[in-house]
Image 1 (cartoon, helix red, strand yellow):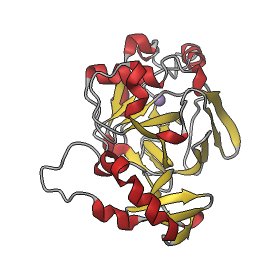
Image 2 (cartoon, rainbow, N blue to C red):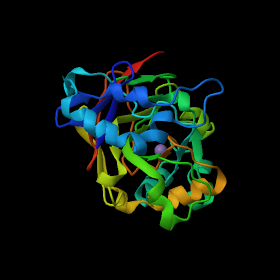
Image 3 (cartoon, rainbow, N blue to C red):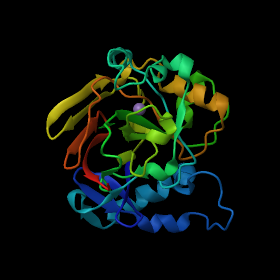
Length: 286
Ligand code: MN
């Protein structure tokens, strides 16, 4: 199932080029008070809500997909875990350009581990990316994004896919420079998630997905998740060995070769097999 959050926090099921508005189901979520429970309430309840969503979609009002505003499919992740250099050819590309990629940042993921992006950086496809510090280079990075579905602490890689709620496309937008990754990659709008969440049952093997990113129709990145240095189960094992993963947490799996600059006015088109594609506009906020 393809689930989108659209317009003003409405819940939709995507069917071809239409969206079924199943927001009525959200009334079944538990009402909560401060302090809010840890994790994304909808993602945490997704399995139990699914029969209601399936029932509701049959007669739910239809909207044209092109006419809705797509928000990030996860509203409240507690963290965005991200893999640095996790494709060998991207490592070679970074090693070959020390002026752009600071040497201390270019190491294999087995040495570096993961980093975190601020959750406040998350936006949806229709929100677009608003660049800051435009005197410096900012790059696109397309990545398969894994959305965690249940609390997961120290998960073995053999059990790892069972904790996944679904997948979406992630754009790990990156300001280049010597500062810490988490700072440069946490600027507002620098974590695009979308266009929707594809539930895990539709993607039994996340290790065979082609991904591609074009800017203004010019091909920039094209690869397959089969070339990940640490695969999706391995990343879940690694992340959960350090911290508990909560429903709605996101793992950005790393970007392949072909990262390149974006400037205001650009339109990025990102596509991943079995998920779909999204167009994301780039603007500037100075
Ligand atoms: Mn990245």
